[in-house]
Length: 242
View (tube, rainbow, N blue to C red):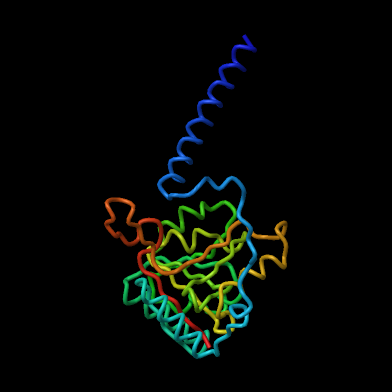
């Protein structure tokens, strides 16, 4: 019985290989050239030198990031300090009629003192502050999630957020509205300036989640019909501080 099973698997393997060869030969025939049977030589690895040297000044980075971020349906505001950032969040919560806000458990966000600044009836939860709480469910109930950016990239208009026990990914993925606080000294020109930091720390030290956020959730999976907010927040604010 064991031999019959092995023969059956071998026969399936042969049929699969034959189909694969026929498929690949058909592609080569349509392209009008012989099959490429060996991996092509790659004379270049990584970004070219001129790209690694690309660097914009602060105002150029802010303008490029703003243009790219807004082009996909997100919103940008620029404030001079974290105190002004807190005022923006309070005002936005009032404007949107928010009743429940969740934030990451970080010192910079604690210093915003949102709990004492928001109007009566608006509650604030701090991610993972109570071990027995179902924090994913709490994030899904939130009107607004408040997150600190770890990095941001002007050229791609993207914000990088790392996860940890105090920085749950659900805070940026589940609330209806996301507010990303982006200190200007964390805004870089090229994406490689962020990615190189992950190489430096080593694979074993990488966080469980590294998220690149480029505006509100967008999906066209069904009949190319663009829908906002399917897989994440439908409204995203980038708050550039400094």
